[in-house]
Image 1 (cartoon, rainbow, N blue to C red):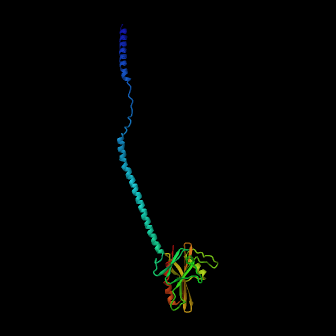
Image 2: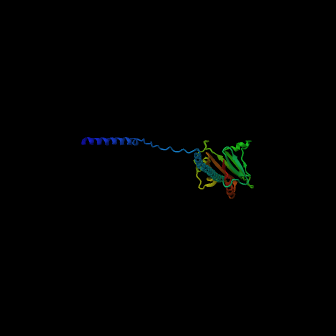
Image 3: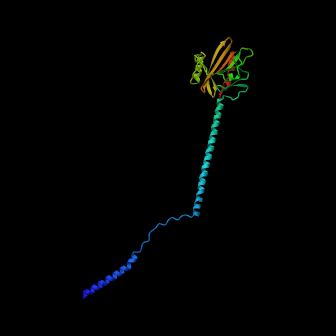
Length: 269
């Protein structure tokens, strides 16, 4: 009897437990809301326009800085070119010799070899006798001379200034030389002066000191003096000569020394 009562109690308890479980199941099976990441908010058109306007001044400032730098570089370049030109001009004046223009002088221009040289106003170009050659012949000649300086007491006296370009040797070949000194030695060999002189002359030509020689010979009481200067420039060999005939010993030195300014006036185009 007691056993039946216990079983009845157990069954009652199980029934209540089942009822409680049925009441709790709906709450446990509630769906869990999905976790989602909110999308970033898009700026409205008005906000985007404000951001663009804030960036524009920076871009304009950068462009302005680039323009300023470019202008400054251009001006500095022009200033540098101006300075270089001034230095070049100064060098050209030095190459021209002691003076650019000699008062009371005539100027000879050779169009073939592109050089200019001054000579005294009372001197004249020596022309080929018995001919009537045009002036262009002499302006393109490789051998020109100017004469004058005749003394009143001796009509036979004369001073001759000459320029010879690319002289030839006894075989007719143009002499070859590697520099001013070598050109002078080669020219002395051409005129038969094999011995080197003890003393050399110096004169300024084209902005540098050019070496020369003086050769003397006595004719009675008079002295003939020859001076030669040789130099190499622009693939050409130039020999400048100065000859005084029938001048007394006490006058010839001063007469020839006065020609240094004319020799130094030699210029190339």
